[in-house]
Length: 180
Image (cartoon, rainbow, N blue to C red; front, side, top):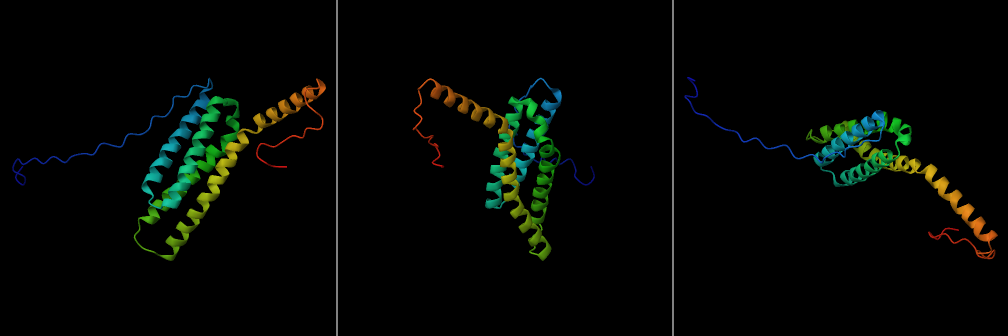
């Protein structure tokens, strides 16, 4: 009171940015629900890291990574029995990826271009592309059973159509993607 003599200064506090709401997931399995909630928490951390990192190329990779992760968690929410397929993804790949991104952010804030800093940042940038591809393969692997089921359905349908005389034997299958 002797130093400030009753002067009060108010410092405005900026409100924290609103976090996107995590979808409430109720799969019927509390362990899967916890895993998905944890996954969405990782997505929020990835989003914060993406916002903090100024490199546009790395940010674009992180956008792809976030989208792929969201699709993985949405798929597992709809197919809880597939949760075992993403165990390593959740326990190792996501945490290490986030650690790498946090390290990149810290290194980028050093304000110097030392050899160790530059080399490490370069390696992290290169690894992010590899991680994105791996995450996309993880998502693709979740659809393996569905692809097999669909392939089986197509084979059975073609057989029935031929048996009923509704499909000409001379007709060749055409790949809608133009592959032979």
